[in-house]
Image (cartoon, rainbow, N blue to C red; front, side, top):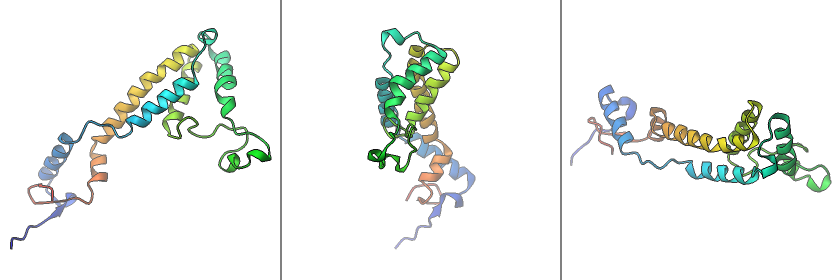
Length: 167
C-alpha cells in the first residue's frame, strides 16, 4: 500500500501554489457564468425602453419624464388593499428592485440610462449605450472568474500532492 501526503493550497510552497493557480486558470473554460443573465437583462431592458420615433431625440428632463411615464410608472407598486402582497417587500409607489428579470443587472442598465441622459445624451443614445455596458459587465465577470480571488473561493477545499497535482 502506498501512502500519499496531501496538502491544502495554503500549505503548498509559493512556487507550487503559482503552478496550481496557472494550471487552473489555463484549464478554466471560457463560458462566463452570468452571461445568460446579463443577455436576458439587456434584452428585457431594451424591450421595455423601446424608443418610439417621436421620443428618440428627447434629452434631460423631457427624456426622464418619458421614462417615468412609459417605463417606470407601470412597474411601480400600486396603492390599495388589493395590492397588499406586492407591498410586502416594497413600499407603495416605488419601483421594485430588478424589475425586468429579477437579476441585479437590471439596476445597472437602468442606472446607466439615467446617467447618460443626465450627461446630455438623447434617449435613443442612452438606451443604445446599454450594449456597451453589457460588454463591460461581461468582461468584468470574466476577469473575476479567472482571478486568484475566485480561485481561492472555488478551490479552497481541494487537496494536492506536494508537486501540485490535484487529488
